[in-house]
Every structure is written in C-alpha cells, then in structure tokens.
Image 1: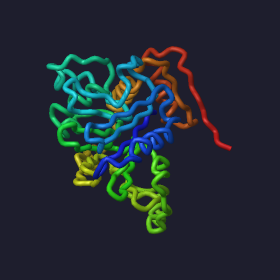
Image 2: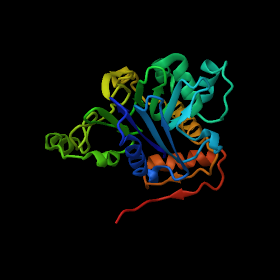
Image 3: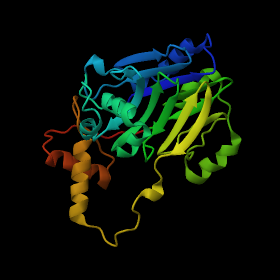
Length: 289
C-alpha cells in the first residue's frame, strides 16, 4: 500500500523534523517494510515515507528517492503500469539503478515536468521536490484511487496519505461539509471532514513553495473520457480490456492473490488470473463484525 508525508515551511521551524517523524509513524501500517526521510538543504521542504515492497525488493528502491542528478526527490504511492514504455521514452540517457517504477517516474518528471502525468497508466499519488527552487509538486491519478490530503497551517503546509497524520496540528470538525457526506456517502474532493484540510482532486496538481499553496490545476478531467460513444458493448473488446488490465496489475516480485466479494467483478478477475497462467491463486474474503 505504502504512504508518504511531507512539509513545506516558510522558514526552518525547529519542530519540523520531529513533526515529520510523528506524521510518518501514524501511517506505519501502510508500509511495514521500511521508512525513509528527506530534508532539503534549506530545511524548509521535508518528505517522509513508509514502504510496502511489491516491485523491486532491493533497498535501493526505498523512498524518498532522488534522481541521478539529485535535483528531484520523489515520494510515491501506487503503481505505474506502463513504466517500461515511459523509461524507453524519457530515460534513455539515464543509467537506472532500480527495476521498479518509482525511479522511472522521478526521472521522467525531471525530464518533461507535469507533461508526464497524462502519459502515466496507473494509480498513484506523488510528491516531487525540486532541489533548485524548493518547490514541491503534489499530484493524484486521474481517477483518484490513491489518496492525498493537504493541511494548511500557520507558515506551513503539510501533506499526507491519511488525515490522521495531521492530528499533531489539531483537527477541528467542519460541520459545513457534513451535508456533502450525507448527500454522496463520502466527502467529494476537495472537501474533507475537517477545517484547514483538503484532498487533491483526481487528476490534479498542487504546487507548494515556502509554506504556501501557490497553484492548483487539473491535468485531467472526467469530461476528457469518451463517454457514450458506443451504442452496444463489444464483448471481444471487453475481454481484451479485462485481460490486459489484470496482466498489467499483477507485475510483482511477491506472491499475487485476489479478494473475492462474492460478486461478478472479483470472480472475473480471479478467473482471468487463472487463465493468464497464475496457478493456485490464493483468494481472500473479508468480513466485518
């Protein structure tokens, strides 16, 4: 699962490093395999990470990770399914040290900036720290599968994979956003249950500098998708799409299994796993008391 945290500060506050460690400890359950921290030379941009190792188990793939030049540092939660094609396109002049997708995403972002994001096929939330400018760029995948929250404090901005990371700063209930929860059954981005906090919208970039949010913009919108362009379902195309979707999501250096809800979707996924050559696929069903 993995998770990351971070701070953008107006000045190098003495509490920042300990605060970052507190924030990162709050998501230890997301990444039991390792943790890591990065503080820039100005001591005003900080990143923390908890890792669940799935692809490239080598410690060199731990995060936060720096590019070869050292200019960009990344904290990244998720998976880029087409990382090999991105590497061929954008990393041909770089000697990659790892076989996973994190380094590819970091090097690609350094090479072409935010233009890499629409090229990514995956689920992700990421933070890119630019050493030269001190700018942190946050982003979230086009569907919003991976969470990323932001807290605006006095002279600082914090960000994290879970809201609980902001508890050291104080979380105050926001009654004004409660109607949205009752209407939709969740808090639609950018709303959350607490004051001074927002969540990135799907397909959004947020720029932080010197303890402030200095930009928010969408690199993808749902209206970009080809809704309603077909009058009937092409079963052959559906089968090919399902086969491809399962194949790219099962690239792993650890054993692969499947959750079964008892419905059609999860059963199809498990059946496709078996058909694609995954023998003796372990399956799990979860119940809550």
